[in-house]
Image (cartoon, rainbow, N blue to C red; front, side, top):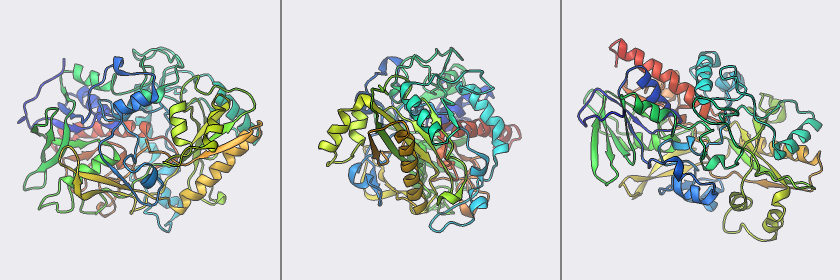
Length: 527
């Protein structure tokens, strides 16, 4: 039964956000007997709310509050108020994610040691290594129901037509690392969730619950423990602290617009790489004039989205790529470190089956995105197979989240400005990926290749990064703020570098690890 805590109960841990980080943390802490209040800015959706309709679900679940895209990326013109495609609702972007469940590679935790200083990049090693996180990846895969994992025994998904086309082309040009997964979408009943029915609307929410999401796993289970209270439509406005610099609670706006104040033993921020630094910056005070936990000046900096793009090939015969899971397979041969290609880091080629509404919007984005070049491609939609490129995006200090100096949102908070631009490494990697993907498709007879520029990011990382030294980042190896010992960051904003892998499993693994650490601190009387 869900708990109800008093606003003045300062024994609870307040978690801001209910997605991969916050939702996981709430359940893992509940398992250890720790009381939490989860503040979620969005609504609570039910399975009945999920529709197999791209635009209907985009409008229903997306975070569409005012944001400003700035910087040299094309979003500043083509997506001026949508820098990121994430969810505002209980479960966060685990409702929307495609279920790809990859582990970061060992070298990706040591990018500065491996590569040295890179001009124009703010490169840094993670303060943890793969071996330290590996046991938590195991636990994350078991929790999420990851295919191909020894923890679950779930087999990989079958290859659908679109992936068969890419896989055959990849084989013909010499690629060998070709798999339908790993994915956190059940291939047979697992953990109370059914097997995937290959409906194909994974990024609109899974109507049957085959895909792992904290919406219907960790959050309800945390509530059932009697130790967690979820408060939906509760927008965090500010984190408060005492004269000693310890956080004391969170001020938020409830669903009726009333300002509430929940006292706290500790605060864990898990609102995504835009909202988390925004909250810390909005919590500036005389003791923290540049923002809470920001003595390093790194809060909001080093925003990463992966080096991305799309490649869609028109094949001689029908493919019908919409039949099956959205991301039905991955080619990983280019994900390894090989600077001889002209860039550091690597990338993966992930099959991506976009529906007609989204593909037509992203094919040539912006007000000029129509005409014969678009219509002639869309006429061949049933003949298409497509890939999303997911590559290492280098941290750059000027890629950052800042607060608008005059414009505010519906809560009275300064609107976030999301400034992003490519590092030259990103540009070289993207071009290499365009060329290699084209080779794959041309090897199996593609009649036309269409390159899509990056669209609003679902993979948001950095802005509150981990660092060994306080001067270099915001939190330590446990996600604990260097400046404030009872403040934690529990989402992808703590990533030091981005890797070539989708971030969700790493966020979950770090949250499980952080829950263990918080419980140990409490047991020792240090929190």
